[in-house]
Structure formats: C-alpha cells, structure tokens
Length: 112
Length: 118
Image 1 (spheres, rainbow over the protein chains, first blue to last red):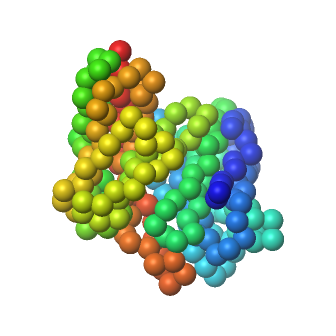
Image 2: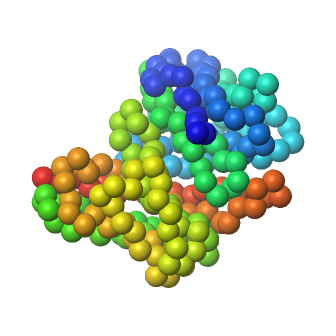
Image 3: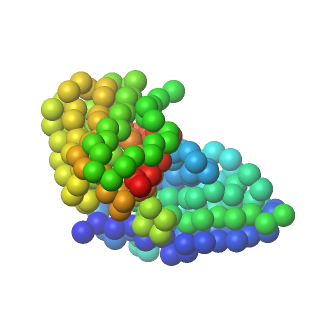
C-alpha cells in the first residue's frame, strides 16, 4: 500500500528560527508531491507542489521543499518562521493524479 | 479561484439520526472526495467519485454512503449517526488526472464540517 510518513507529529520552534518538517513516501515510481497547510478551524490550503523538473520547489509564505528521489523524501523548510506560521502541515502524494494519500500531519507551533 | 463549499460548518446531531453533509464545487472537476480528519490520524478517505452517479469506497466507508447526482455536488450521508462519527469532515475536488502526462493536478478542499454526535 502506498503511504506517506510525517516523522514529527509536533514541532515547536522559536520565532525567526529556521524549521524543517519531514516527509517520506513509500514508492519510487513517478509521483506528484504536495504540502498543504491547515490553519485552525479551516480546510487545507496548498503550500507548494512538485510535479517534475527542478527538485527545489518554492511555495507561498516563504516555504520551500526539496524532492529527493533516492531517499523518497520531500521535506518542507522555511529559513525564518513567523507566529502566523503556527498551523498543521500535511504532506501528500499522488501517483495517478486521481488519488491522493496524506500523512498524519505535523503541528508547527511558533513560540514568541 | 477554485471554490469548494461545504454547506454546514458546525452540526450537532443525536445518535441514530440521519445526517447529510453537502458539498459543491464550482470548477467543473470530475473528481470529488470526502475525508474524515481526526487528531493523530490525519486525513482518511471515506469515499470518492470520478463522475456523476459513480462512487468508490475509500479506506473507511463503513457507516457512510454518498450521492453524486450532479457533477458539482457530492453528498456524504450518515444513515444512523453514532458517537464515534464525531469528527471533522472535509470535502475536496480535483480535475481528472492522467498520470504521467498530467501537468498540474491538484486537490482543493472546502472549509470543513465539524460534526458532533451526542
């Protein structure tokens, strides 16, 4: 079965510090990879996606992610976080473009 | 902008009641999904649909059914609500993907419906 693993369920980080949220997926075949953010009491919003091409993908709000095929990883990074980045972050993978598999989420808390 | 609208944000229902959660998307997407979100479990797929009147079971279909009579509307039905169905329900849509030739398929979510069964 296809799966997505988010290694950290909770990540606390001080304001203006860098952060990395980790994501690994189970298959080595061609994939589409996504990061979504969920603010309290809201649905999921797309942060960034990898479809093909450059392995470094830039998204909204200063986030970026790097696709590493050999390690089947797609880690999300931000060099300097803000209080407003406090949210739940989900990694997702799609193989056909019709079904999407989500990780269990990482709760990012930015500490003032 | 793609818009996925869930008709009810917050509902409280009694055990045994029949519950309808409605979802409408405005982008003519072929695919529609219903997920359930619980703490520590992430998003779990209940049902999805590739076309009108078509449905496929996801990972946790037990206790749920769906209806897709029109392309833009996908309803989730709890025939007899139980307390273990208290959760956040997320509807989503996406255009039809074509695998390797696809150039930008993305899934779009509604705001979510918080259901409490008492």
